[in-house]
Image (cartoon, rainbow, N blue to C red; front, side, top):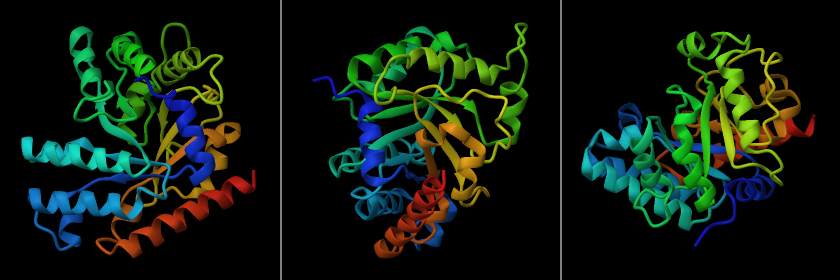
Amino acid sequence: MTLEPFGARLRRAMDERGPLCVGIDPHASLLAEWGLGDDVAGLERFGRTVVEALADRVAVMKPQSAFFERFGSRGVAVLERVVQEARSAGTLVVMDAKRGDIGSTMAGYAEAYLREGAPLFSDALTVSPYLGYGSLSPAVALARESGTGLFVLALTSNPEGGEVQHAVRADGRSVGATMLGHLAAENEGEEPLGSFGAVVGATVGDLSSYDLAVNGPLLAPGIGAQGATAADLPRVFGAAVRNVVPNVSRGVLRHGPDAVALRDAADRFADEVRTALAAV
């Protein structure tokens, strides 16, 4: 059964719950802060606690696949359960796996995350376009078919990203701007929101030279521990701020394992985002 398009489901969730996305990032250091072992049991306790505390109140949850994969097949099995429980509890799941390849390999990644019924089926997937945007075609096609979405790395928050993303092509456009242009084309005419979004870091700085009006969501890492605040969002994203999905991870997760403390931290960030948007 094909789902309602991801963009429409995301817009509704953002309107009802606010746009906040909370990461599920079981760093070894966070497991230790929670008093958990750096093992599969600790991983499962961490992931399922975050889901139980927050999945009924935030629009989006974003598990970082790498922190589960490092435990091998048992860690991936935990990730499967975390994704399924989060979706069952009513939140949208963006799998942060940053997959990027060509041809049948890209199609295989798409099948793993975007084909309904797959063990890791998620509402959206982060992808890397740096083998050429066209290399993402199998994922784009399956996302359209299944009602899921993609978040394409465009202007990321890590300082190293600039050497690729700000590089200028022969036509005078930067690589990052080119990716945004592709996404605008994918989302043309979609209402209320397209399903193909960009990853644009809240810590990138001045984005006035970039056209962020891609008619799709803008996943914005960098809130909290990386230094950006909700109050920065209108300045960074300008007229596109209503489509921003601000992501916070450590700023919420460090308050665990107490579920009430996790909820209180997420609510504080959500309130800060609402206040920032109300001023626009």
